[in-house]
Image (cartoon, helix red, strand yellow):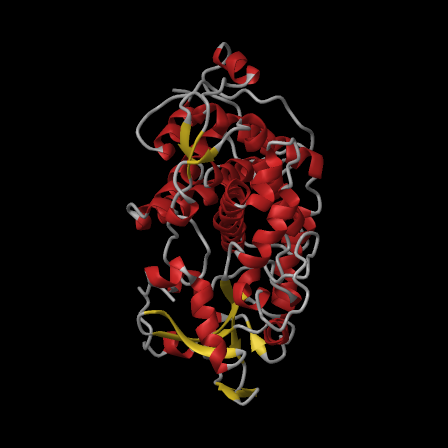
Length: 436
């Protein structure tokens, strides 16, 4: 499940695996064995049975005994961290409560305003060029800008977070980038402990869960991780569908933007995290005649379960019974904000660049290899050269550094800077952040 053949056509792999039944043996990376759950009902059974299937990776036998090397490429996605994703029972409820209660304080209209302003900033960078990679220059960057605002991150720390996350995304000196990200989050936590504000970081630290600094780091990392890679895939996969499928593309020119329908389709057929929700049997379990050994990873194929042939209802528009957000006690706590961010990002792009079209045939788009995600390698498009927004023009006449305010609960006017063109999108973004 880690080569280019799987990335190009995962549905074909799922079809072959279904010959084994609702579960099948797979290899996530060289030498990393797991069981993949491909059936919808089987997936629900695992996700909703915490008394039998644990989320705690410290139970992973092959990692503990050295069968799986610590430097295996899948270990960072599966290793234990003290956050809500990798804990069970009361500890999970404590850590998850800090996240869900803080997310509940995010006002949707305020979040929409942050997404719209971030989107306008990024579109202003590409609009004068007439071509872009909507993955690297839009879908990948927008969630990070929004999260910086939600975390109450001041510009100097925001610049370092951009640099750290860009290094991880680009795979360039990832160890140094990860260290920079950790140190920056520690600085953010220290800042918010000294001067709390109306933002997610402050709310989580003030929560009755009484999170330690280590827990805060890992909670923020899981929020950033869940809000960047899956979010960028949902945005880019939604744009790909809207620009290539006649069922959707045909209605764009008529002024109807069926964004919600497209997102429903993507969440059913190409969920941004296709295979994840890793569980570990607490004891040996026999499921439908298959032995699931204690401590062996059981990976839920959210994509295969969603397309299980036994599902008789193929109506996807408006149907939210998919497993893209997982299910059970570990279902995604940020479903509504995540969907709002994706919908607004897509709507804003299509509104600002209404004549955008794919620059290559949809069949020539490449997918990034990897067992967990459903991720495009790029999304090249072209469009008539468009003007930057009026706000961007005004911003050029004001302060050099664009202000990304702390999350205050109320929308504030944006001051994006003028478009710049250093080499590479992350370089352009860092230059924009510095006001260059």
